[in-house]
Structure formats: structure tokens, C-alpha cells
Amino acid sequence: MTATHSTRMLILGSGPAGLSAAIYGARAGMAPIVVQGIQPGGQLTTTTDVENYPGFRDVIQGPWLMEQMQAQAEHVGAKMEWDHIVEVDLSRRPFRLIGDGGTVYTGDVLVIATGAQAKWLNLPSEEHLKGKGVSACATCDGFFYRGKKVAVIGGGNTAVEEALYMTNHSHDVTLIHRRDTLRAEKILQERLFAHPNIKVLWNKAVDRFVAGGTPEGLVGLDLRDTRTGEISRLDVEGGFVAIGHSPATELFKGKLALDKDGYIEVETGSTRTNVEGVFACGDVMDKTYRQAVTAAGTGCMAALDAERFLAEAEFEASVAA
Ligand code: FAD
Ligand code: NAP
Image 1 (spheres, rainbow, N blue to C red):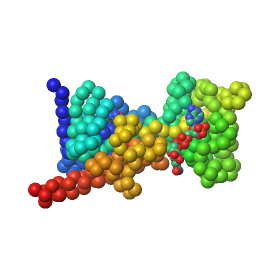
Image 2: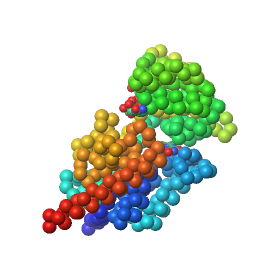
Image 3: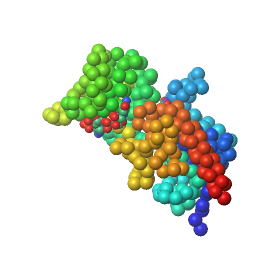
Image 4: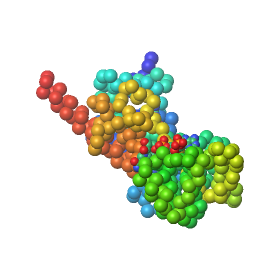
């Protein structure tokens, strides 16, 4: 027989956004269920040092931070379910979600915190050197490249912002773009071109991230000229891939309003989506900040928005009865 789990507050995703929503929801007496997905703890479980999450003077480890968040959520009454949702029905309340083994989850309100994943170049050498010189987040990892030569790959707003950000740490930043014009906004381009510590290499694609040294790390990039095919070497110790992010919103296409990049649209200043009773928080609705602390902040907002929504709905129902 198919198992069914029902709750007032159903939370999809167990990164900083989902777990923060769970802490607030549990403390508000909503006995939330968190469906964790295939990456319990979210993106921070894929990294090591975290130095910018407030509250810790010393460096902490991403997986440890997420274990603590989960333990805190469970301690105040949230329940974790290790399942991956494959189908959602948002057409009526309670909302109904189905896991990949057929388990059914229903919630009077739904908080979506499915996050986003950085896009990668998908080169074997990139995979090999992830965390050893290759990163997809300058704001997170830039600090570890103080005084070193670095490169940022991409031509959109993210790449330009990451290149500018890296000048806080490095005097030698190279932006590598596969074409001869950037996609980034003009104002960002102007700042980029005016910066004395940034140079741009046009019409270049990364062919290989080059490993070397002891302990092994990134020592350079083999670049392919996209017009001539010629290969050249750029010596760098940090390579930041900034070619975009994909929000995890496949499940919600046609069911929720998404923006042109696939992020869930929320009302300004809140986490309300266009479907009453459905709230979104964290990287799945935020293409600008994409940090653990902002994800946790919007997770808190989603739980508070959801609690108020339920209180109003229940009050109206009691008046009508
Ligand atoms: P995520 O952390 O992406 O979590 C998404 C959750 O949704 C996961 O639990 C996943 O299993 C679940 N999920 C997705 N789809 C489904 C589904 N269909 N069914 C069920 N569950 C589902 N930020 C910082 O502030 N400081 C740092 O130092 C830092 N370092 C980083 C290093 C790396 C390598 C990366 C990749 C990111 C880093 N970030 C850092 C960014 C930070 O991790 C994210 O901003 C943050 O994790 C976003 O939180 P989230 O809860 O919105 O989503
Ligand atoms: P983006 O705009 O999609 O740009 C991605 C860039 O990466 C493009 O220049 C693209 O090259 C390049 N690229 C893609 N795949 C590549 C590959 N396989 N190899 C090499 N290069 C590749 O992504 P984004 O910069 O992350 O921005 C996403 C959205 O968030 C945009 O709407 C952006 O405006 C927004 N955003 C806004 C801000 C802000 O407002 N401050 C900050 C960050 C992001 P081509 O140009 O050749 O396609």
C-alpha cells in the first residue's frame, strides 16, 4: 500500500533555505515535514571551508554546518524524509507531492527550497580539480586565492561580477570569454574594462584545466581559440567557472510562474508565489545573491509568510462556519 505523509507545512529541499524554514515552522507549531531530496543538506555539503556564515569566528566545514542545521530543525520538531519528489499537484489544497518510490506527501502549505546548481563546462580535468583550484563561486572561495593569479570563465553578469569581486583578493584577474562581446550589462562591462587588474581574453574556450604541484592543484588553463583552434597556456592557480546557474524548477513548469531564466517568481518583499499557499525561498527564487545566509534568511521569511497565510485561511474558515 502507498504510504502517505500529511502535514500543515510541507517543505521541499533541505539546504539552508529549507532547514531554516523548518526551524521557524516547527517553532510555530506547524510540525513541518522536510523532503530532503538526493542532496540532503544541499550545495554546502559539496564544499569544505565556509568562512562567511555568521556566528563562527573560526572556519567551519560546509557539511558540518548542514548537519547542525538539520539537528536543530529536528530538535524543535521538524521531520526529515529522505525522498526525491517527481510529481507535484498544486491545483488544490492540500497540495500533493509524489516521491520517486510512490510515497505521497500532502501539505496545507508548501515551501519550495529546491535550490540551483552551477553550470559546469563538463571537462574531466574540471571534475578532477574541483575544490583544488577550480570553483563555481568566487564569493565563497575567492578568499583562498589571495595574491594569486586567477581566471574567471564566462561573459554574463555573473562572470563580470565575479571578476570584479576577485580584484579584492588578486592583482591579476583574467576574464575568459568564448566570443568577442560580453553578454553582461553595459555598466558592469564599463567597470570591468576600467579596472587596471583585469584583462580580458576574447574568443577563448577552456580546453583543459592543468594540474600540477604538491599538493596537487590547478596550475594553468589550456585555452583553445574559438576561431583558429590554436591552443595556448595561461598560468593561474584559481579558475572560476561562471557560465550560469540552473534553478531546480523542472517540476514546476506550467504550474508556477517562472521568470525567463526558470527561477520561481515571488512577490517583491515576500516569498509568495502566484499560487496561494505556495512559497519559495533560497537559490530557487534568487539569482542575485545565492549565498547560504540569504537562503537561510528567505527560508525564515517563507515560514513566517506560510504561517500567516494559514492563520488567515483558518480564521476565514471559522468565520464562514
Ligand atoms: P540548496 O543548498 O541548493 O539545496 C537544495 C535542496 O533541494 C537540496 O537538499 C536538494 O536535495 C533539494 N531538492 C532539489 N530538488 C528536489 C526534489 N525534486 N525533491 C526533493 N528535494 C529536492 N554560500 C555561502 O554563503 N558561503 C560559502 O562559502 C559557499 N560556498 C559554496 C561552495 C560551493 C561549492 C557551492 C556549490 C555553493 C556555495 N555557496 C556558499 C552557495 C550556497 O551553498 C547556496 O547559496 C545555498 O546552499 C542555497 O541554499 P538553498 O537551500 O536555496 O538550496
Ligand atoms: P548568463 O547571462 O546566461 O551568461 C552565461 C555566460 O556564460 C554567457 O556569456 C555565455 O556565453 C557563457 N557560457 C555559457 N555556457 C558556456 C560554455 N559551455 N563555455 C563557455 N562559456 C559559456 O548567466 P549569468 O551571468 O549567471 O546570469 C544569469 C541571469 O542572472 C541573467 O539574467 C543575469 O542578468 C542575472 N544576474 C544578474 C545580476 C545582477 O543583476 N547584478 C548578477 C548575476 C546574474 P555566450 O555569451 O557566448 O552565450
